[in-house]
Image (cartoon, rainbow, N blue to C red; front, side):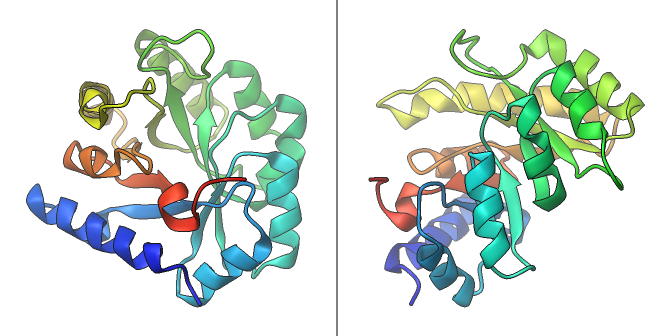
Length: 220
């Protein structure tokens, strides 16, 4: 049986979308299942959910090996270049493309590389991955030159006790996306918003939200 909170999250997505005149179908809920057992993922799968997010290469590979093939795996964490070989074959969308060396590694391998999102460090935090706003275009051009599809941008704003403080970061990411779309029309996705602020992210244009704790409970 799926966790009760899953339906609550779906209801909140619907309400947030309607408040800003959007269709709920425009928003993809990525259920972040990092550190959660396969049984929890299986319960949500049985409820009809297909998009799951992981942030550790080995963990995602192990889970993918025993779970149904039609799950769409999203890698949402920092990816070491030497772990690309584990993640690339099973990833539906990489949310955390953040440097040229990873771009070259991602482009290698058999078949077409899965699409990516460029991670932007909206708060210029030295401890966080992601490119600065003025570095997005250069990385985008590198990826496109390598034949990697770039579908949009991702951000993890600075932590705050007040979710409203995330709004300017979400808004700025959307404005950068809008500028890029004028030249590169496929760069349209916005992965932003987590358990504490996903409704604000939806109001600011998120097309993918990454929610773990509100669905699965706190990590142990």
